[in-house]
Image 1 (cartoon, rainbow, N blue to C red):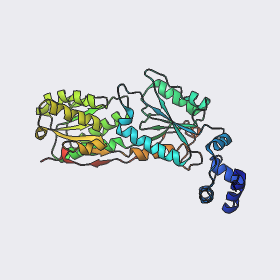
Image 2 (cartoon, rainbow, N blue to C red):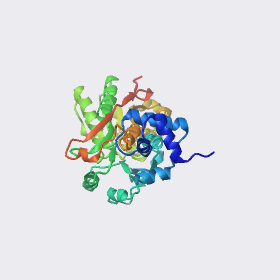
Image 3 (cartoon, one colour):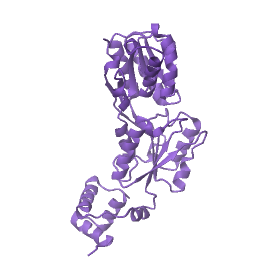
Image 4 (cartoon, helix red, strand yellow):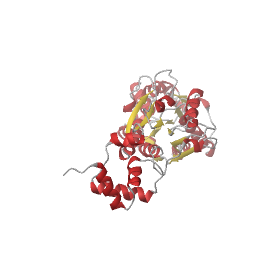
Length: 351
């Protein structure tokens, strides 16, 4: 005989030793619930095979059931082929799925001023993760408005200095410092740095780590060794011309991501330089392509998947990681930094 949802909820309540109202709050992720109570109710619900329909759950919460993820606009780039985007989305999606939420991907348009508040007003999303943010006045104002409205959101892989936003990021200063320090320990002194645009906080943080490592080794900073790309393989390929022209004065290259590092290596090969004549290389992200490069590319590993999981967990109702936006207003940003790790391969080892 088919059992109705009402009966099943009653059975869950009786077996878990709680009221039906408590079961409803747990399953609908509404209201404050002690973690041990929430776990007990969910365990019993799973044991009995009771899962409320998504439609009923969302109706009960008067919510969309969507976790929004705002993707950046990058000209002529295939976002889902980018290692760090695919990893972050996998982490976000895994946590959202486990919490009964669906992902709604939102893509910026060129030159568009993002009205995040409208996404909530139209009930398209219940909460939002911001990827690919830049240091931009309009962006800051749009996020401040969200905060004033008490909307739950999290900025991922970017830091807004002086703002009180919820942020999840990696320690790029230390990651960059470790990469350059490794090259110095290998005996390299003239280290070129191919960075991304300074509108991204990651770029300024990687530059800071580069400068710290030079200072610690008492190596004078040379601004002519700092080049700028846009995190694409093509920008690395284009930078290879400058690096090849300066090769007598460069013995190592640190790139702010693997794509640019691989682009430089490709450019040097196509311009006739043998692999044995390459400068040392260290990239950043430790993408799948790094291990397959010739020579295998040393790189700074960033826990993008874990960052995605953590960012999502901060937006799930009932989660102990949830940080209401209004609690952050006027305070320092609640910024969580995950550790990076340098993965050493043949590209940076002095023969």
